[in-house]
Amino acid sequence: MPRRFLLLLMLAAGAACAQERTLPIAALRSGVTFAGPDVRALQADDTANPGMLWVQRGGELWTAAAPGGSCESCHRGAATSMRGVAARYPAFDQSSGEVVDLEARINACRTQRQRAPALVREADDLLALTAYVAYQSRGMPMAVTIEGPARASFDRGQALFHTKHGQMNLACAQCHDDNWGKRLLAENISQGHGTAFPAYRLEWQNLGSLQRRIRACYFGVRAEMPAPGARTLTDLELYLAWRAQGLAMEAPGVRR
Amino acid sequence: MPNARITVPDRVPRGLPFEVRIQIRHPMETGYRTDDMGKSIPRNVIRAFTCRYNGDPVFVAKLSSGIAANPYLRFFVLARASGELTFEWIDDAGTRESERVAVNVG
Image (cartoon, rainbow over all chains, first blue to last red; front, top):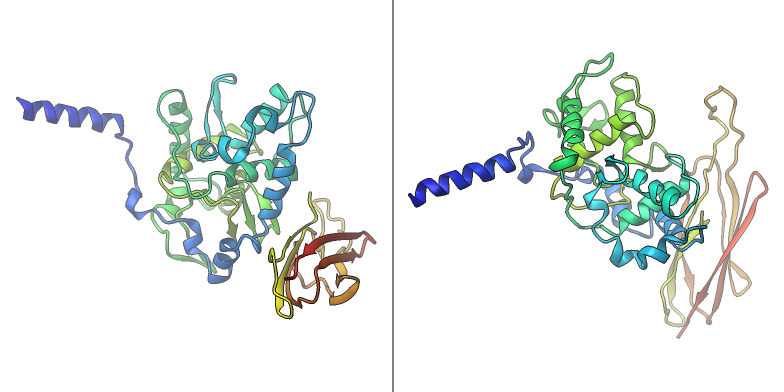
């Protein structure tokens, strides 16, 4: 009898976290491990990491006055209040009734609480605030919630990840699940984790969001790119965050 | 945006060299690129960079379009007396910017 009970318990537990993983958690590798020694050194040294320019700016914006108050007037010191927050995003937002990423959450705070204008995606100030908030979670494991109201977004993201796109007719999974670690021309194919974003990409000569990076993948497979802030991209961000579960946050990272 | 991040040691022993690191926020536009409309983007790179230690130039650099955006410079200065390092740079657009940082020798 106890044995049967145990079996039932295991089945119940199995159903609760039955989400199948193509990449087992033990096999996960941060994108930085696929980079060359120069890029790794740039990311490892905060005085050389260009992304820290945006973190510094984000710290200034945190205390900047707005009609409804600065970020700091509600959240106080980011080092404590924002610790671990970025690791939980994208997350379901009760007020808008949809899953939002960190950029959208910051903009919601600006328009609804601070009564300040929303920032355009990829604007320096939005990148700076995102980088500043994400920086507070450095080293913490990615831990998004996919159950409950976030489930629909997760399912869409997962389906997209496995759907073939564009003229090249490639799905994200074909590179990042099936062929990671191999070469694609001059590039090492990574597992496609977004843990370093917003990241400074040498190709961009600028900091960029995970959405920008995903859009670059759409371009790479010659598919039509979703608009910045599109729901499609948030869905993918959520799926990627779940896929990287447990990997350490490293924003602002450096990538080629 | 802040225009530079500067790193110097908190305290440096007299008579010994210490490391100065500066990262300047700048697009270092080469002049070879075009915008989305096909119009050429004018060249705008930092032309000259000078670091002064209590007024005396200790490091001077001439930069060109071969240097990537957000240039990062790292050099050594001999610690003589407590005071100030001033950094100044000018780009092709004629924008002159400067930053300063205190040096504690002892």
